Image 1 (tube, one colour):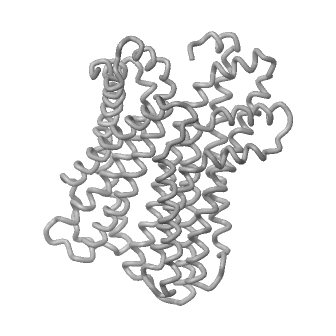
Image 2 (image 1 turned 90 degrees about the horizontal axis):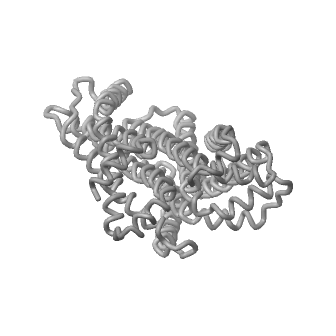
Image 3 (image 1 turned 90 degrees about the vertical axis):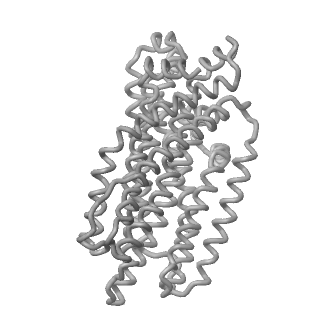
Length: 436
């Protein structure tokens, strides 16, 4: 099965492009920040510089590892679902479930390791740029030299290998599971994340306004709440569709299609919820903290600068990965609907109506994801601002939310509409005759 997996990758490289891109970007980020730990371990590095480099490597490396897993899982879920007929044919030809797992996991690991190999050079350049940024801000001494060593390589290759193999196994398991069968593991994880997030957010009230760790509890709680809500957002989308008063051909077609594709949209909805919740909560709280420091006339300490750098870096990584996940999944899913669009056109729908239905679908998905992410972000912002400045909702949050929501809508609508327009250029008869 390993030989079959390698042949599948060689003959159909386009199908694995999303996985390769996710692995490449993820490994480059993990290696770049992992190299900071190699740099901190060099002899002669002072304690302050070592602490700054080590904390940045650990925190951002942890977030990067999770995002690598989500990005690869999103790409593989779409790819495995589109290969359901091929996998069923292999199953009918005598392949056992274990052999299918080895084939899919082998393909994923091969592509991911190739992406990790290609990411070494960009990771070295990125690590040098990160060290220079820390030195320019005064967080790391100028005398510290850069080093790309075994920690960076082990972290990058290890995280990519584990993410690819685990994500492939879960994607195949999800694709072969009976439709409509509830996932108990997802429900358990969602409830656990929501409960832990609520506890973390409420613990904010145990801090004082001058505590250095004040932002940690609400930020971590908002992340957990976003993850828990993201796992439950397909059910929320189903409830939203039941109360969606859309009329006309485009609206009716969009709602009908979304009801059928709720499971397929789970990855997109999860990415939107995580992006909106984490970005809005982190950036809003950081803006409130910076405004409070400026109004007090104090100068930021090294720890405060480190925290700000970590917050902005984490949000930047989230933005990059969410955009990659959304573009990959939406492009692959919309391209796969070529035959469906052809059938709709042969049934009497015009290309404009099909494109309008795609626009309505994307708008509903965006609203659902942004709405869930906004609720989780507010759950972290409100306690932080009440303790830090006495206000309930800071004025900085509105501008941050508008920017985050606009970026999410632009990515979803832009990718879906551009891809659908490209797909609709194929004549309806040719699209229907093409294999699914």
